[in-house]
Image (cartoon, rainbow, N blue to C red; front, side, top):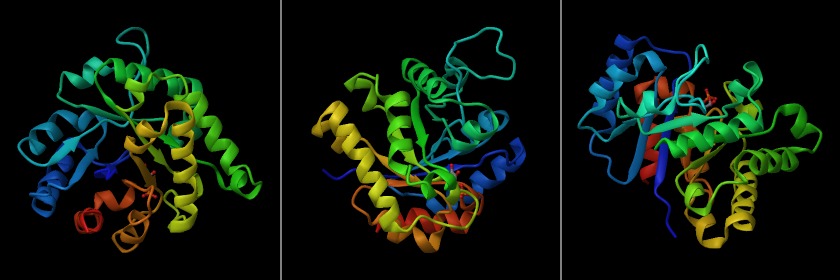
Length: 253
Ligand code: 13P
C-alpha cells in the first residue's frame, strides 16, 4: 500500500512568534499547492497562535513539540492537549531524543504523553532512536525495540493507526552525519516488523515511519526512496526555506 509522504519540521527552541510568521510566510510560497505530501511545522509553544493564523488556508499544518499527559493541574512549565487543540493544533511530537537526553523523558512518560495526545485528539509523532554508544555496542535493535514496546506496545489497534513514528538516531541529529539510506531502511524495516508483530500486517502497512537526523535537500531523495521511509522529521534544514522546499520536493518525486 502506498503511504503518503510526510515532511515535518521540528523547529526546536528557535523563532519568536514574529519570526515564526516570517518563516511560515516564506515557506508558504515555496510549498504552495503541494497535494501529494503532508507538510507540518512545529514551532515553539509561544508561537503556535500566530503560526496557526499564518498557515491558515495553506497546505502547511502546525504541530507542537511536546504535550503533557494530564489535562490540567500543578505541572509548572507543561502544556496539555486541550490547550493545543483549542488553538486548532492537531499534532504533537512526543519523546524526542533531546527531551529524553536533557529533560528526563523515559519510555514510560513517552507512553503517557502518547496516550494523552491520542485521547485529546492530537496526532502524535513518537520518536525513537539509539545513541552512538548504543550503536557501537551493537544495541541498536534492542534499544529501538525497547523504546517501541514500552512507549507504544500497549496501544489499541485504533490508536496506533493515528500516530506516526520517527526513527532518529541520536548520533545523526544536528551533527551533519546522516544514517546511510541502508542503515535507516534497516531500522525502519525493524520498526515495521514490530508493528506487524504487535498489531498485524494490515496496520503495519499503514503506519508512517519518518526518518530524522541531518536530513537536507541533497540527501533527502535517496533516504525517502527507501521502501519503509515514509517521510522526514527535519531539524536545522526546516528553518531554511530553500532547504525545506528541496526536501518537500524530494518527497514528491
Ligand atoms: P537535524 O535535522 O538538525 O539533525 O535534527 C533532526 C531532529 O532532531 C528532528 O527532530
